[in-house]
Amino acid sequence: MIEKLIAYTDIKSPYAYLALAPTLNLAAKVGVDVDWLPYTLDIPDYLGDAELDAAGNVIREERTAHQWRRVKYSYMDVRRYANLRGLTIRGHPKIRDTSYASMGLLWARRQGMTEEYLNAIFPLFWRRELDVETPTILADAMAGAGIDITGFPDWMAVEGRADHDRLRTETEAKGVFGVPWFIWRDEMFWGREALPLIRYRMTGEMPEWGADLGLA
Image (cartoon, rainbow, N blue to C red; front, side, top):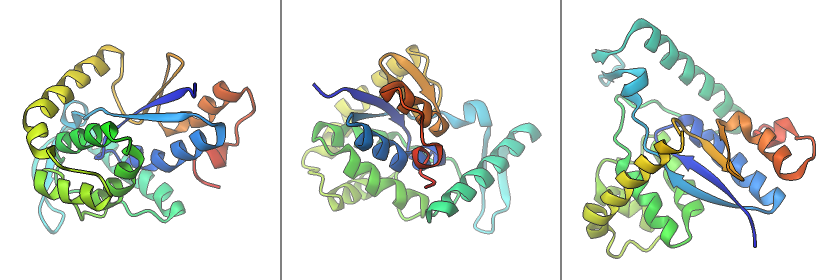
């Protein structure tokens, strides 16, 4: 039986986007499966909230100066890593509700197509080419990735929402508070930077730091 690395993700986390390819590469290299699960972040809970206009001016904010410094640094940080890998990360004018996208991941998981889903949805979202708050637009993107969306809208409206909310509660009960979040043999790891250590736990071999982080 192939062991599984549990990985929690959220489309609106640029750090989770940066972790996608290195996680899949590590799993393929070691010979384990990745069980992708959604954890929809409540960003205003710890980073405050804000909204920008088309010109990038702040038109609404509920953030402290400290929170603004953290947000600005975070985007500077993710962009320099994204540039090394040729990825586009464009900040959104407001914090998006990604609960529909999380439900989309659960739907794709039922079909064994989480990798196809994430590889399609992440780039679209961070190029600002996908409105994840509109279920029909999300469903079209899923279909474009080869995912069967028959019954998806009805499922999402009732069962999908219930599954999403229950999973979020269960996930937080485990101690999860961010993404990307990994669980390997009951040991928890937060952040893409933990991937080399996860590889060490899996194989007992010294990690290749650059390769494991997707930088080589």
